[in-house]
Image (cartoon, rainbow, N blue to C red):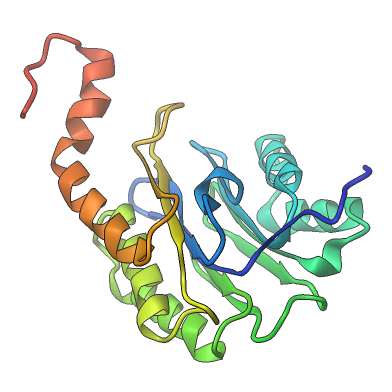
Length: 227
């Protein structure tokens, strides 16, 4: 596969799965614009992927296709790694449908860069103030067990932000969650804002009461709007 070097995103993200429902999602924020248009990839009952640093979005599509064909997160990451001559410039995290986690931080990522994998999640970032950023993200995800996946992902990137985040701050963010349907339960983004994580929380707070309605409306268009 002939892959170009890609588009640079200095980013921190969390990829997660709800062990109770199987929902899959990504929470992400970065200094660059419109991060949610290029970095998160999620498919219901298949897996979730984030590609960042000098990202090539094609790697996200490849990883999802591999997961759909029965590859585990680890095996999918091996295949993605082998496919890309510029893999050392990438940072990639993958969760499969069973909650297995795999991640890789290339040697050409700018400091601080790294990741933490756990049961049902990956926390990762590059050009961060230090390892404490992803450590705080991982802790926030683990400690919010029992909450909706959207809430857990948001708390994780909020913890990353509150721990200092990345050099230069953030300007865009995104929150994507798929449950059982082929369409997302949640797909929210902030493409340009001086406080994108705070703005994402504001949008989610308004959206959350409508989330079930939007899903049910696809099944029964006659249900009354809660607004």
